[in-house]
Amino acid sequence: MAFYDLTKQQRIKKVDLINSIICDELNADAYRKTYTYFSNPDTYIRKAAYISVGRIYFERKKYQFKIIKILTGCLKHKDFKVRQTAINAAGEIGKKNFKVVAHIFDAGLFDEHHSPCNAVIGSVKKMGQVNPVPVLSWAKRYLHHDDREIRREICHGIELRGRTHPGDILPLLKELQYDTTARVRTTLVHVIGQIAYKKGCLEIVVAELNRWENQLLVQEALIEIVDVHHRYRTFAALTQKQAAAYVARHSKIKI
Image (cartoon, rainbow, N blue to C red; front, side):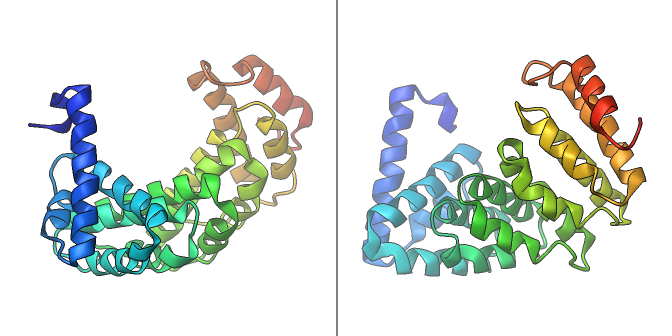
């Protein structure tokens, strides 16, 4: 039975069971059921497993070394779901202690399957939101990587921090302004739009874009910003008309 076919009370019991079994297997140094959870076809079972691993890491310090060793070993598992879940578990740990899991993301960026790579993006988003200094410092190392997909993934991964603190990621985004790869450029423009519609963010983004040299990219980004204020009008601090007026008044580039 799928996780969300269970009642709420049954789901609570299932999560508690997963947590308990993972603890037992850490104690026994045998991980058959843990790997079964990590490879489960149900996304929510895998999520319960990686959240449990993150919780256990901080609540039971005696298991910390074992957990990092297990997650590192999972990166060589033949099942991409196991690798994906391990990266997500590392993301839970990296919210507070990025240093001990940085190597997992170094490896995960280059996984041959898209799912573990997407787990890197998702984890960088959630870690960067609450633990930005080491995560953004790590991300910066990959901004000019030869692989365009790596550059795109990093650009996408730092987005969430920028939604509330655009000034933290704009210097990193600036380094991509002359990237000639269409997918990277599209992602860059998308991220700039995403970090500009919350309260107080448009002003910061426009001021920073005024200092960028690539005027064609800036123009494209400003068009996206105005459009985002319509697409996300339920959540945007300003109406599209107000955003367009602000851009017209304060941007050096006209659209």
